Amino acid sequence: MNIFRWLFYNFAYLKNPRWDTGISPPELMDFIAAHPPGKALDVGCGSGTNAITLVQRNWQVVGVDFIPYAIIRARLKARQANANAKFLLADASRLQDIGEPFNLVLDIGCFHSLSADERLRYICNLEHLLAPGGFFLNYTFINLSDETKHGISDRDLNHISKICSLVWRQDGLDHHDTISAWFCWEKRK
Image 1 (cartoon, rainbow, N blue to C red):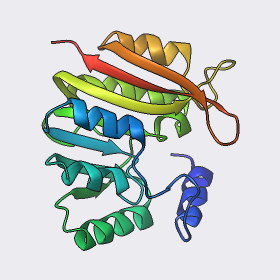
Image 2 (image 1 turned 90 degrees about the vertical axis):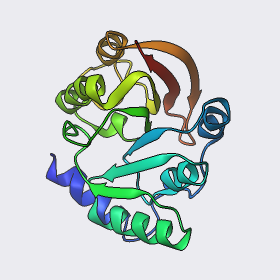
Image 3 (image 1 turned 30 degrees about the horizontal axis):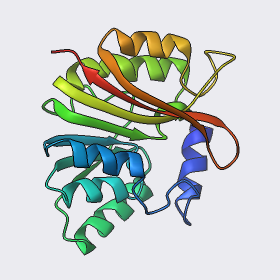
Image 4 (image 1 turned 180 degrees about the horizontal axis):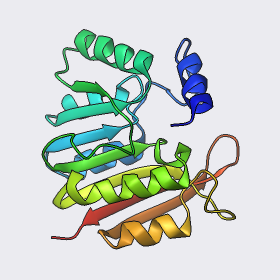
């Protein structure tokens, strides 16, 4: 893990990070409306907004983040919302022992911050994190130029496609005009 990245995110959570809006995005809300509740893993859960949204719609949720203060905030928010989610301090690229397979692995903005090696380990973990027929719902920046830089690359997409089938993709720009996309993948049965 990169110490500078760790410090950056820790300092960001001393206030309210710009990416932690406290609002679940419409793509997640549409997914929830179209799928029955099950077990969900929220990777890079931050302060727990999306995990709490899932719990409030009858999902069993585990949220993970590598920032201690984010996990503390998530636990506090869940307690205040009376939402029974489990929050763990964990590295997104090392989740092989997180538990039983999940019907949904949700990642809103964590994957694109990982190094190329970390992204590959993360993808390899999807094999056992996702139940057969489970979904990987991911919002990420797109890396068009260099696989070693942050953002999802063509190599990453090829690796994910060995495990999952692409259900839909929605391209766009974030509020800083960074090329990004939502991906919904389904693990093959």
